[in-house]
Image (cartoon, rainbow, N blue to C red):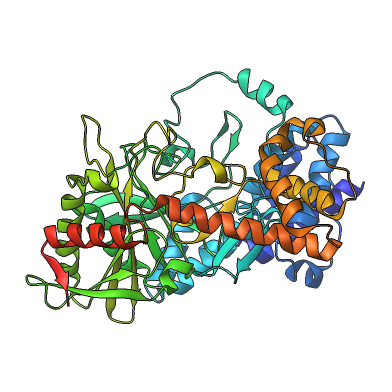
Length: 504
């Protein structure tokens, strides 16, 4: 039977790429036979060279999952969960991963993280094939050379998916989707059988690191508190961020603001995000230089960036973290109603997104000032995406996007293609005839048609892309607590002066 050959190929793949020990092959084969409800077996020879050239398990995994579907072992809806179950069987146990990682890290931190990331791709926790579907471009026409991704790796949920989730029993285990209890877990529509993590010591606390299964950039991962404790940004947060960049000096690491509207999607569990990537904000030059009398050996600048960013650079880690902590505490209680900044009106509104990285022997901490006040004009948030831009993105602008890498919803891939057809006149435009999910784009379509006339296919694609680039710039401008005008610059300087920071 062909399935026996497919099992043998998967076992060879595990030996070649997942460190399956020769002594464990028989045991692992029998676990696979049980999962596939097989009781007999015939050994087959496989093309070892071909398997060793594979970069992900698709070609050896998909035929086995197909067999399970075709023979009634699972349904098509169970494809992802069963695939993860199969790959878990042939992967190293969590303790083995930790041992291997720490042995490598003792010699070279970058190689240890490279290995862990590669293992995640090879055991299909990091969905490399799906990530490759994302559309990505650099918006070179923008001031900050923003990077834009339309996220196609995660399929949009259908009504069928929603109905299935409604039938799932509510549970407090794991407490959230990033708790350490997720390692090996499959339930509630979330599959973590192939998840592997490594421990971290940040600020004297037990944390752990895992890579993102749907990475937004190279080696995108999450540092997670070992305890299920709410997000917070306090002076000690900077200590933990700097602990991390000492442990992984090739990475940047950042913390979302710990408030709704301007924070991340998971505020119930303290965590950071980072990875092997230089984001557009990191490349932004300094706009103006400042100094603080108490911290003469820290370079203090305001960054030439869309939102309001203070950059601190020093070879002295202790001085830098103390200085950054002072700014964090000052911003929490700073108000300036002349520019709609209210720190606290019974509810906390000011927050900071801190980011840390290293350059040679220098530590760099960037502090993005955030505020989640709302108003009658902007009920979703004064410093949130404004209504005229929400047809492109309405979700909160968190850490990664605030630094210039936009993750746009997958719906846009289909919707923007439809917009192009209106611009080329391939499809006749009528506001009344627009599909329900296209109505949010009506004003944009009409304006682009008026401004550009009838376009060729190539021109239409460029017009739409330029429009997306423009909107993403506008969104970052929306998030700036101090606007890039005379009034905004004066207000920013007023805040800096209140902390003892003056122009150099």
